[in-house]
Amino acid sequence: MYNVMSPKAEEFISHEEIIETLAYAKKNKKNLELIEEILKKARLKKGLSHREAAVLLECEINEKNEEIFQLAKEIKEDFYGNRIVMFAPLYLSNYCVNGCVYCPYHLQNTHIARKKLSQDEIRNEVIALQDLGHKRLALEAGEHPTENPIEYILESIETIYSIKHKNGAIRRVNVNIAATSVEDYRKLRDIGIGTYILFQETYNKESYQALHPSGPKSDYAYHTEAMDRAMEGGIDDVGLGVLFGLNLYRYDFVGLLMHAEHLESYKGVGPHTISVPRLRKADDIDPDDFDNGIDDKTFEKIVACLRITVPYTGMIVSTRESQKCRERLLKLGVSQLSGGSKTSVGGYAEPELEEENSQQFDVSDTRTLDEVIDWLISMGHIPSFCTACYREGRTGDRFMSLLKSGQIANCCQPNALMTLKEYLVDYASEETKEKGEQLILKEIEKVPSEKVKAIVKENLVKISQGKRD
Ligand code: SAM
Image (cartoon, rainbow, N blue to C red):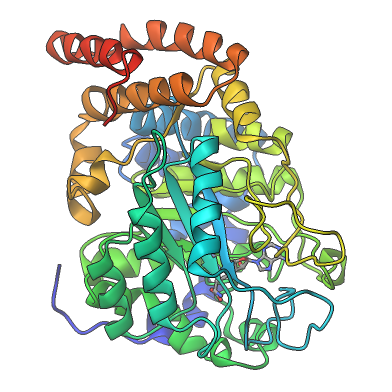
């Protein structure tokens, strides 16, 4: 990691540069020669600059747009194969002191039940999640200095990692909590979190301030510089995202890429993941009250352009999106999916009463994890519960090197198959199990190294005999 003083938020997310980039992209939206040149560079699969990406996003030449989608698919297959990493969100607390106008957890909202899980309740939630087959969680919490202080988050993570139940254990806890200090990030690193995820919501300072009128989150610079502090605190893997629907998508697309470029140049490693959430209906929130909603076609183009621009960054899509939409996005570059998600506090162990409504937003894909796994397998994807990289210390630049070395087929693919096998034996319905076993038989033959193939075959037998990682 480099030790150079990072520039301030307004320098690395320069409003002037975004405006100039958007004007450049608009001017060149039909410039065949330039678009072909950018696509030629993109085919090298080493990424693009935010300016080049903005031109592709704006491109209005149908034939070139087809090439963009095709290349996104190719890059997805080359870098991630057909593996899809599975996770579930776990909501710890919806107490919040912020005034975010798009989030039902905002302080003024008196309609929703405020809930915070005790350590016993966390235990019940985790057992319920393990019974579904999950191994990887994303912790979610509102921002509240006394209800959800860092000590509460740390204790909760310790509780989660300590639970060994039947064949299950949560092996990676990613954390999505409000921007905090280097000292707190260091505590999160020390306790062994996976990725630290923080959505920027929007990179446009003026819109940001209107959308976050009160509370600690209203400080644009503090929020935007959070990833620098997280990395200073020793967290290698950080996850970026914007909430599409809040602000003009073109602006946030460029801002997101400038943020990624900033992390790469000042911290030596780009973001581990990018999430692409879209605004959803929630308790007192109606997405139609916001003017910047994007349709599915535009959304797909954004995902395809991101895939081409940052090939080494995983892409996450949650159950905010429908089955149909997720199906398209999977082909265009998404590598991680949530499944069987509950966005209420305590929703896994016990279904919530209607009048309580502690949900953060309505989910669109309401299928169970088994249904999602069955669907992925039917489309030829390998649902993966693998967390080996994290456990073996392959995070940050070490993870990126693995990706760049092309050893994924000999490493991630076999691990994915073995964790899928564990899922099939321990948790799957009969139908999913049958389809999954067929998929494993087919996929194992694609492992390039004969030696690795033999080890995997041996391990698969051991898994069916009850051995667990
Ligand atoms: N309190 C932390 C923070 O402020 O960053 C954690 C955030 S919250 C639990 C997770 C994310 O949900 C937010 O960053 C936001 O992007 C998203 N979110 C909030 N309201 C939403 C809505 N109505 N529809 C979809 N996503 C929403």
